[in-house]
Image (cartoon, rainbow, N blue to C red; front, side, top):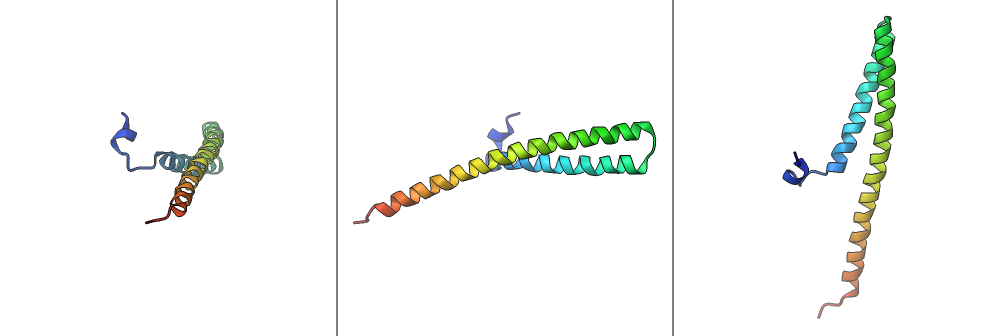
Length: 92
């Protein structure tokens, strides 16, 4: 759908980061509820699957966090280099 081209004002890596955090929290809460509240085998299996999905989303969260941190550091270093360049120039 190429939404990133249509809505360029959004920070897409941050949106993906928030999606992973939200999904991990929701899966974790539902998994705890399924395991603690219901005692049948299907609920236990759903709880185990939910815990597995939580781990997968947490790994994705960690990887995206590293990418976002690198992206933000690159933006800061670019701002610093332009600031140093403008400081070195003298106005007439």
